[in-house]
Length: 267
Ligand SMILES: C[S@@+](CC[C@H](N)C(=O)[O-])C[C@H]1O[C@@H](n2cnc3c(N)ncnc32)[C@H](O)[C@@H]1O
Image (cartoon, rainbow, N blue to C red; front, side, top):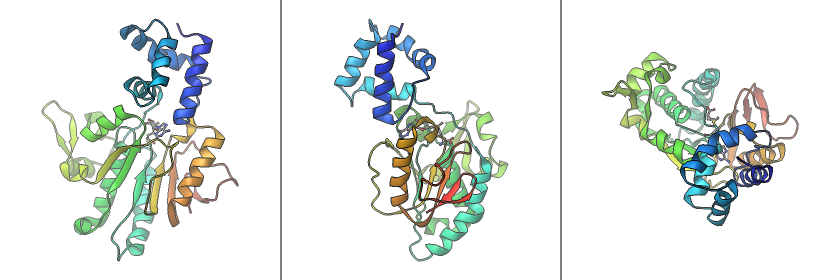
């Protein structure tokens, strides 16, 4: 159904808009969009793309981005990093920010929320009763509005929350009448979800202490990655921590970040 020319038009659009390289992903593109084209009565992909390009902030443009991002995530993913965050990073932050009591943590491709909610649980657990005296809200962003909606709802399946340590499930979730698990209001308040495209200029006024940028750079080309990492570096406090996905790299020697251990770097 999709022609070569139409496919290339979508590849170019997604690269420009979201940094995502879909050149080798023709099956994925048509697999995720063919039904939509039929359902909406488009005669061709060109007709659809004409609308997307004419209204870059419109519904169809957002639909395209939502459909072509890959949002796979799960609770406690690459959990060694979470342990490092709690056991090494948080104690350092607590000492360093003893006066300001303000931590700035950014989860930069938060998908359906499992990752930022986990970071909030770890912060609350670590600070214990002192928690309410600190401003430790986590900023969680994604380009995909559909996953952000799900994240804000904070409702997950039983199988999904069972990946977490049991004491976290008990403390931070309530079972719903249909057997799902909803994050408590207390936890929800600790995470701010916003739409943000990593191709845009970073909006931070105050420097960040910790950035989680996991499993998103795999979709970007080297040049896009390097530019983004450069911006993130400049947006962090000296000594700030960057976490990336375990299958990702930041391009040895090219980045200013200092290697600490696999997938963990410091400014
Ligand atoms: C595979 S998920 C990773 C989720 C989570 N960080 C993890 O490691 O489990 C990648 C996320 O990156 C988001 N994403 C892709 N391109 C983006 C961009 N240009 N700006 C912001 N988010 C983007 C996708 O929408 C998707 O939700």
